[in-house]
Amino acid sequence: MIARETDADGNVISEWDDSEGFGRIAATTARQVILQRLRDAENERNYGEFSTREGEIVAGVIQRDSRANARGLVVVRLGSETKAPRA
Image (cartoon, rainbow, N blue to C red; front, side):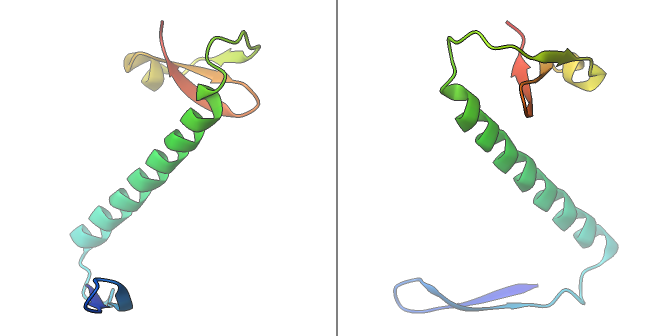
């Protein structure tokens, strides 16, 4: 359980976190939310990095990834790995 204390302006003054009451399902849900937020942050970083290169010709190594292929994505290693939609 997370409790936040805020001032009149809505600014957080203090937070209290008690993870002892987490059950197995709540812990799994929290883990999934954290991992999803990490994936979202990584996707935003990759988008920001490669959106400036739109229209450029780049060299990279195409990797086979059946899960990405099933979702219509192509995995290309351009120094760092990213997934791009198939054109």
